[in-house]
Length: 322
Length: 276
Image 1 (cartoon, each protein chain N blue to C red):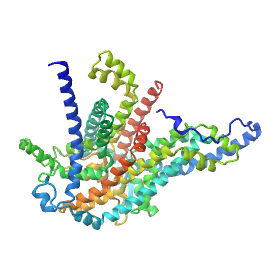
Image 2: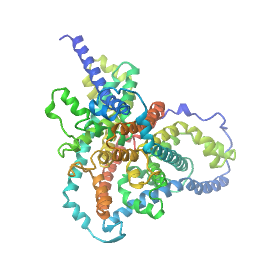
Image 3: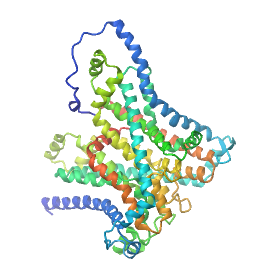
């Protein structure tokens, strides 16, 4: 992404045009500098190695164990954890819920947000554009725990806004214990996530749209190209890089969902809103089956890893155009 | 219908859509804050009426029932992990961009690859590791984890910025006899102020709101942050809803203020960072 170098031009003190050092001296300082350079990178590398990469590798190993963390006993289980997973209906339910999460989030937080950003940016008043972008963003600034608790109350049958609004519209028949019904719980949680996240991606798309040279839009408008065709043929293609990135970030996020499900339903009722993250937690920390939890973590790893590879491939292809 | 008529209708629809979305966002938040002022009886009698009295009693009650402690822990974890993440990342970015490091390419890849990893994937070994280190159920577990898992993203942002600062500055400084330490603290870091501001705001937002690690690695009083504390408040005082609403408002307010106060830095960081 382009940076404006003008705003951080070097301080005027830098002396220019000194004679270069003799080659021998330069080589010597070069070697010393190389070693010194490592010292700067080392602290970050050590922290990453110990607390991110090592546990990642260990987790793979743990997934082949039968392991009771509280008594400290473990034994080799071979592929048992994975076989158990294949026959575990809650695992498949969780995976399906993650996929539903990804699909809805991509529709709302990528394509919906792109459309919304284009609409906001089409406003003539700069003040309104900024105000709306900021208002839509607020839910992303508050913690997902606060947002989750808030929606827990909104969905509450007696107290909540949703049933009251439905009643007010004369749709009493639709009133519902949204989180208490295994048919609606996961969708109620997904809906809350969209409320929390759409402003974040709208803001990012708005920034991308602002980078489109205004002359292009003006020329198109002069040629009589209507707003719908301008969106489809100019805006959307020109923010294509942002769109594909957001698709990938959103899918990856959907497979890491944990917090909102935990706060609002803990995966219930009857495991209907379980996702991989909460099922992993439940299996390990509640049912004390850490080997199985590690195996679920391996699945999460592979899904997010594949998505990341797709991002790398996309990034390489796009880089050429810029 | 005439062309102007259609255009007028389109504008009305556009504003209708944009403003109703704004209401959908703002109304629940307003409802949350207003409920923090009500009594339980008022809340159940008519959840949508304005409170009869604007006393701060529920806020004080939430404060006394643990929110003050959760807040203090959140502030501590946020400040310390922000400092450690920003410093370690800036050091790494400096080494990787401005000094000649052996294996620079692979090392950069190793640091940035962490961006792709979900915290859940390392969770179980981390629990075991922190139990062994004796840091389980301590604020330091959160400080370390927030630092470790955010170094890749933070280094990525700072690195992209540092690459664009002209190298001649460092060369001039080194000819003047300045070592890398001096160059980093006195020359490069001050030039990086804008990205450091973005990085700090993004990390504060992350650390303040993080839930997974906070829930699993802390349990006792004095180690729980606001997100976990709020769910406790809910569990323990679940029937006294107005107090829970007050606690939620207390937790949400600082980040909303930070967002509006630091919007410029915030948006810059987001714009640069989405490439992760």
